[in-house]
Each structure stands twice: as structure tokens, then as C-alpha cells.
Length: 90
Image 1 (cartoon, rainbow, N blue to C red):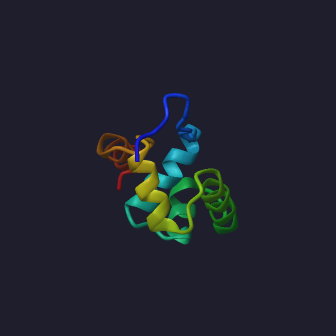
Image 2 (spheres, rainbow, N blue to C red):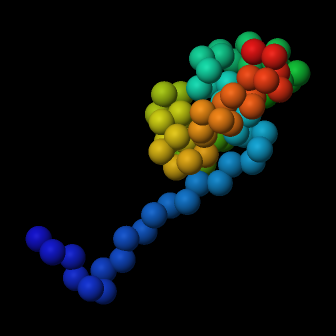
């Protein structure tokens, strides 16, 4: 089945703040909420709320799906994760 010339494909562009990318980098590194809170100097409930906000923003169901979507959309790269590791001495 061929697409008509007038048909449009809508691609949702996800945008995360630098801080949200740090949160997602820690998730990608396997850090749990308590460890992420310690690293980022915030309360665990702040990590939980922020991650829930990120998941909603990028339409992710869970941690693994969120990390996959971030990589798929170029929000996370190995270089970004490496920078976060260096910044927080991980």
C-alpha cells in the first residue's frame, strides 16, 4: 500500500532539560532512585517525581523504555553518559 503524496508523517520531538538528561543518564547507568538522589543532592521523592514527569513527557512506560526512547531520539548518547560519569565521579 503506497502513501498518498498529501499524507503527512508526524514525528514527536522530545525535548529534555540538561538536568532531566542527567537524571536519565543515571537511570541508564543503573542507578536506583535513592542512589540518584544522593548523587544529585536531592530527596528521593524529587527523583521519583522528576522521573515520572520525564516518562510522561517522552511517553515511556518504565525505566527501560525511557532509556531506549532517549537513545532512539538522540537525547542520550554514550558521550553524554560518559560526561555525567565524570561530573559525578561515578
